[in-house]
Amino acid sequence: MMFAPTYLDWNASAPLHPAVREAMLPWLGARFGNASSRHEYGRRAREAIDEARAKVAAAVGAHSTEVVFTSGGSESNNLFIKGVAALTKPGLIAIGAVEHPCVREPARQLRRVGWTVREIKVDREGRINRADWLEIVAEHPALVSVMLANNESGVVQDVASLAAEAPRAATWFHTDAVQAFGKMPLRFRELGVHGMTLSAHKIGGPLGAGALVLDKRVEVAPLIAGGGQERGLRSGTENVAAIVGFGVAAELAADSVAAEAQRLGRLRERLEAHIGNSGARVFSNGAPRLPNTSFFAVPGIDGETLVAKLDRAGFACASGSACSSANPEPSHTLLAMGVDPVIARNAVRISLGRDTTEDDIERFAAAFELVVAELKNLTAIAVHG
Image (cartoon, rainbow, N blue to C red):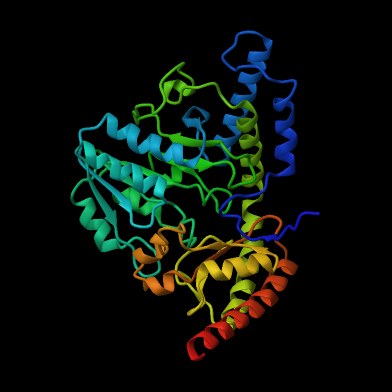
């Protein structure tokens, strides 16, 4: 039997929910129609997509006509940023300093066509720096993108307040809500933004499905031109099975979000009490955070090494560094927060989910204590040997 570590990396991807799998199965077999076809097979596919669109919209307090299905969060972020920019005179684009690469990189690409890019600073807890934000607002940015909840630290930004302060007549405001969806209540109208990005696989849906929730007042140029699917904003034959799964996952996530937030918050408190006893420093614990996310470092212990040791001990978690063997880099999020690069390289992220239990936390705590003690001992031998 294959070794299966306890999964503590839910922010990376959530396992497919059993109910989602069951809903998708018919669309991987007998129900195979192209939703653009006029016959019965096509009509049934179109009805399934429409039903899923309504479910996703209801889960986030939007209208179904505002939901544009995509292949995931990266495409949705690119669609809004590049799509708006393509129809707007080049000006200032402002993005949070701790954004995901799929926001940072398209923003940087816009520099080649005359746009100015400003990163909005964050404080030491990872929250948007208010003074820097107000300075940027005074420059009347044409486009703003601030993520609702950070994928590493779990910090939740007050996007509604930021959007309310942006110059409404001149600024299109977007938020990447991929990590927030399913972990906190989410209402598109209440955020006051013009675009919001969602992804299915973070909430127990399938990989390869996402959505851009788009205010009807916003015009965007499509990234993919062709047959005119998704109101002409995202051409290509729809992935009916994935979209159906996304709809079911969204419905399930919305129904359970309040209770799960309380349960996971209690588990995280227990986790952080345990790791604190082993000398871990928890980042952003003075800011509002997602209830399932803990981002920490043990001084003197490399994060990649710790993650590898924990994996062998039976627990799958994540390093806080986006690195390759050729070019290891500390967490961009932590560097933006002013964390020493040496400490940033020690970062580890634990993220909990629907299957995480109290027993998982207790077993992890015991393994963590042993692994940290072992690594500290090896470090001491290396230093003094």
